[in-house]
Amino acid sequence: MSNRLKVTPNDLSAFWMGFTPNRQFKKAPRMVVSAKDMHYTSSDGRQILDGSAGLWCVNAGHCRPKIVEAIQTQAANLDFAPTFQFGHPLAFELANRLVDIAPAGLEHVMYTNSGSESVDTALKTAIAYHRAKGNGSRFRLIGRERGYHGVNFGGVSVGGIVGNRKMFGTLLTGVDHLSHTHNLAKNAFTKGEPEHGAELADELERIVALHDASTIAAVIVEPVAGSTGVLVPPKGYLKRLREICTKHGILLIFDEVITGYGRLGTPFAADYFGVTPDIMVTAKGLTNGVIPMGAVFVTKEIHDAFMNGPEHVIEFFHGYTYSGNPIASAAALGTLDTYREEGLLTRASELAPYWEEAVHSLKGEPNVIDIRNIGLIGAIELAPIAGEPGKRGFNCIVRGFEHGAMLRITGDIIALSPPLIITKGQIDELVDHVRDTIRAVA
Ligand code: PXG
Image (cartoon, rainbow, N blue to C red; front, side):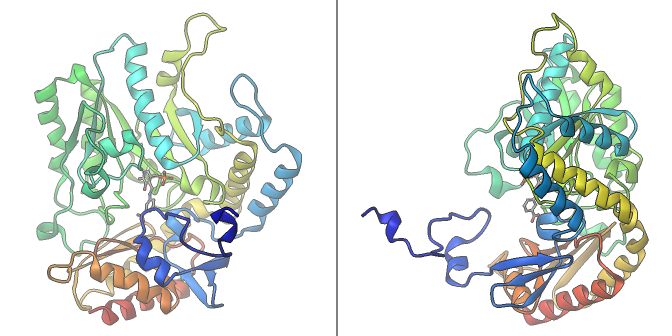
């Protein structure tokens, strides 16, 4: 008998979990078995308030009827269809719907299956665009310290989180990084966008002076850095970055995997900050996290640069088997319907003032060294336990789950990003959970 047949049901050893301390988890698993709206149900039958919209993706809340129905219907009707050389209507309908809600100027959409793939699609498109325009020397990609752009080689190369980079060799060559904008000394406990740091965008001029603009393809940043612990851009920073990119013919890529689909109270962060990128990377909230899917938006100018040569020849050698998968497309359409019917792409703007006060009420709790917020995102930075960075944060995950809240942690920073359907009462409840947790781990 093979060893596989001896495996007992629910043995936890075979699944090597991502971004998880596997040995600890398997000794004391935190399992959820179902979900509805704002709550998970744990395997021991407790209601767990979702403080992080899953992994920043369940923007409409869990198991929403329109999305469930769309998936069920589609699975029984057209399960898979290629989008290479063939097509199916939903993928086109979805692209039109997406362009309708996107910032003006972003007129074409490519599909992927994740944020990581969306990022790599964007980076490749940027380099290929310059080449299509006869500027093949523009190959450099500029990211930012503390940036997170997924886990594929392109995204890790432009990303700036050391733990995600250090194990993987040389990564892509021809990459440089801007400084991050986090500045506790000047900006701690700022509500919304910090006052100090717009001048950090000028570092792009320094990088241009070093490499020459003629070698630089694109700059990629998260408008609000999420994974690294919620870094809200200083006032004017993104506008300045846009101006410098435009001046030097460098494409600006916004990674809106977290900020997209209503998180800041506008459909996209580009709308919130009034800054339109040349390429916009999305995933997560596109399907409410239910089916893996990403979408990369590009300008007409970028798209049209590829549309030449003989008409029977493929214009761009890129795409994924599951790009525009019918069931994913149906899930996304069901999600967009739900967002529209419930006004979810702008709901965070109504809740933001209440949210801001609630999150900042944690000032003065033990070890709290900063609180940040924007839209329906909040972060509480805790002082690390001496000599054990990340331990206090980890304790928050464990304690929070035991007492009924799913909290997302980066190092010693608690990052809050609940589903956009949250009520004011549930905001209070979530903040109370965080308060209790912070006190418990002090
Ligand atoms: N870009 C950004 C800005 C992201 O936040 C990705 C790309 C990659 O997406 P995929 O779908 O390939 O995972 C992300 C993902 C966290 C957390 O707790 C954040 C992400 C993923 C998992 C956990 O902050 N962001």
